[in-house]
Image (cartoon, rainbow, N blue to C red; front, top):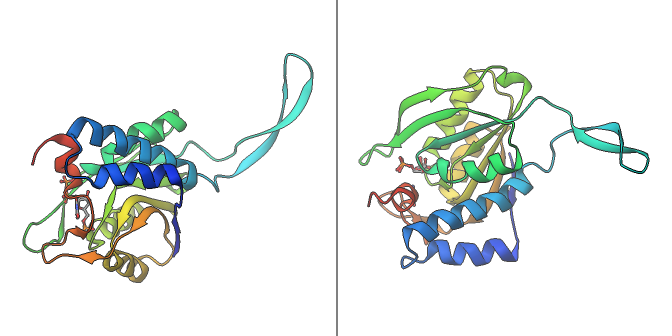
Length: 208
Ligand code: PRP
Ligand code: URA
């Protein structure tokens, strides 16, 4: 498994505001989107390009364009939706799949409730969007479902990860690529990331 933790002053600054319990919901949502933009730049670093020739208003020149079919973005509902606008801003022709998972409050096991993936997963780079990687159960299930549907080139983008979740993914999906904003200390007894940011879905959508 390859793991990149983005070390960038703008991300550190935004994360300090995102973690702050006093940050209101509207600002929290905007900051998650901005953090998503920074992570999207890193997550797309290895997209293949090909040489093309274009005519500028002045002369012909060689330049680079994306080579593969449009990427697929798969936000894990609900919190993954917070990253989607940023990724679509950078890749407006991307296809979007949706995966509904929620953690059972007692067992922390992910419960699937919705799934809609675009075709040709096997031929496209797939970006799985979920700001939170806690026990790793949801991410592991998302990767399992995408692989079963044909996906091979999978990148998981998360803002915060717990060591427990990273260990789980390393065991379940050693071929996965991860792009993270930070690795936090540990999980608490209810499976929340410490120090973390609380419940991402609730803070994004005002359901706390
Ligand atoms: C959160 C988060 C992840 C999951 C991470 O979703 O967005 O999908 O928990 O936890 P895990 O690594 O232990 O599986 P949640 O289940 O709270 O659903 P929600 O976004 O709809 O609130
Ligand atoms: N999901 C969240 O939203 N926050 C956590 O800390 C863990 C799982």
